[in-house]
Image (cartoon, rainbow over the protein chains, first blue to last red):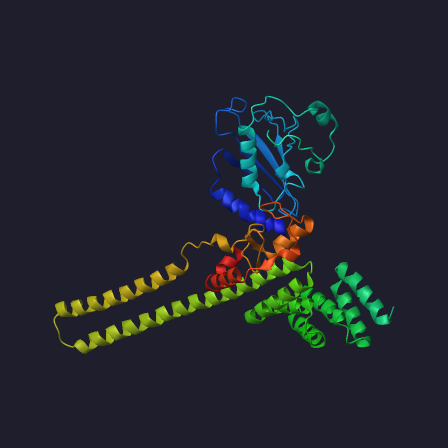
Length: 153
Length: 272
């Protein structure tokens, strides 16, 4: 059994027991791709009454390597508006990059970081160059070298 | 290249192709030409592991260890063969030796060997547990048999007494037997009660039970195999992101002892 499979098995049994408020497991049919729903816990008007769908993709090197995490768009699951979230669902978060990742992070802690990233935001805008990025991007999210220019957002 | 080495290379190719029988034959031919090459013994041992020839694996590893006593692979394969043969103590001993040599050599197989150490300890505990359960249930049956025959004998010796007294004495014995059943039931239920692994024994990276905990400058401990895997990719502390190198890790002996002792008493924790 690979490193990733064993660790994800343990994460899953923990998730099945309990998850923090505002986070729900949608499906985890294998150890390659999981879906979770998150929502914010305050009344931030940008995200109130909305649920967002996250897709996690794990490599065999997880958690040594970070998972690939994006928001996915469905009829009732929009992509949250945020200056670090592109309209195709790609998230620009230090924690998820090759440099910012730490193997002590896990699916639950990532969801919580994303919750607080939304909660703390009051800008109703997409990242600079969103349209161009979404049109031109062919890279996998984790290979994109984001420039973390504003850590206060 | 010598002829023995050519045979070895061809054996390696056959091994990778999954043709274990031919690979084994090629290593055997090479060993005739060069009977002192430890790698030929370990290579043949792994083909024999794949084909479940446990006794032959043991013979190859023993021979290899005679030539080269600190051969990590020989200890690792030997442990796997002993495990397959249910020789748990030998399996654990050689797994631990392989682990020690692997750490010393900074070999890449540390993740696999660490997992194997846990597997050996778990299977040894399972076996012990099975034996304990069987012995308990045998003891229960024996005690039950003794009590019922003692009751029957006592009733027979009563001879001519009135039905009331006989009933009373029979009742007394039945209570004793019932009480014995309850005591045994409680004892077995206790063993299978809800089991919890303490957080201090769990590695924050693999989420596995720790076999060889090492401590960082910040005071946090991890499984050696996991943290080394992480530091090879990125030499920073997982918590503080400050620079951290493999050479700075220190074995956490007290925690290791605590983990070993916990596992000794709670073998089920190995595959938590």
